[in-house]
Image (cartoon, rainbow, N blue to C red; front, side, top):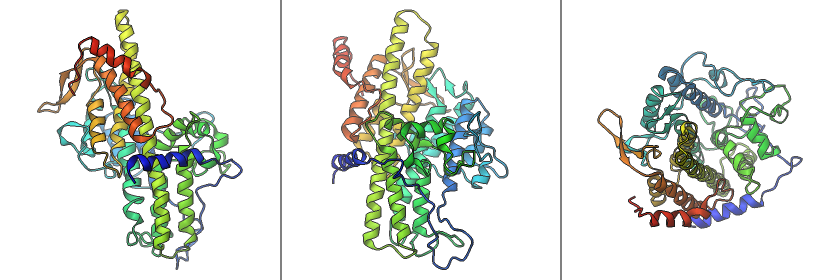
Length: 459
């Protein structure tokens, strides 16, 4: 089945799913099925390590946007022993959070050793994912709260959006929902590791769900409610166990589950519920195996659930990339208006840089899954470039010998056209439905205007 047909099937799944709150299932608790276990545990669900990495990611983002030192960034990038207080999420007025010490959620976790360790084709100098992030953090530490006006780079957004893909999406869809579904990899009739109270397949599936970032009770939430939980709003719907505070280990919305909810607010998609329900259905299948090795038929069914999860997860990232391509296009149009009126571009340029950082981070994240995007990935990288076109008509082209950026001359009008071409490329190849900030209707007029002005495409 080719890519377009596979994604078309996924579209049908998204549109067909409809779950009322009264019918909604939660991800767990699920009983202990491991044969020979005689401990006190009653619930086999465990994904605290993944939650800890979500909190590390959120906190790292805060260190960059808060203008903190490189050493502070390192604590959340590489982890540290002892107490490590989360910077986000944390208690705010009307939204108390249960967990404050990341190492008490799960000790010894980090992001650097879980980041996809292969060369990033959308970035110069053949850097691996961890090398690129460390370079960005080095530059962020010398910037104005993550923003470098000269290059137009917003390192808060670049680091955050890339890591969501290179850690969470990659670990889940290129690991737990791929190799670890093989019969001889973490089998269901053995513990995940010595001393564990859960089976190999139970924990592999749980860890993938943890990286998705949805509250365990997401099926009973509207997209708006799930979205607001990530913003620290809606204690009444977040607090599923009724203890008066939000348990980060099961009640918070993180990462791509948040962006799924954002897309779903359009009313055109059901990504959050589609992916979460597939996780629940897969976990029920594993639980019903009652600690026995999965049959080939069961593993085949599990792989079908995994395909639903990862196809839609990929589309959530593609939807976000599409959205921010539209944002960048609109920002360029606003900047041109301000410039023509001899106005102050400072605030709008900062917004433009933020949106580009989100766009570029998501574009790179989209390429960090199990699927090799091939030519599509090459086109995405060509259209986004290594950085935004700045007000003085420059765009990053690479590095000099001391890791300073080198630049090439580029025009904003041409870059605006690139954003429209990027939206078309994404729409053509990922069967998008939400399509927020859709500016595709303007592509013909912009192309004609640039052609009339003598513009020649050189990418």
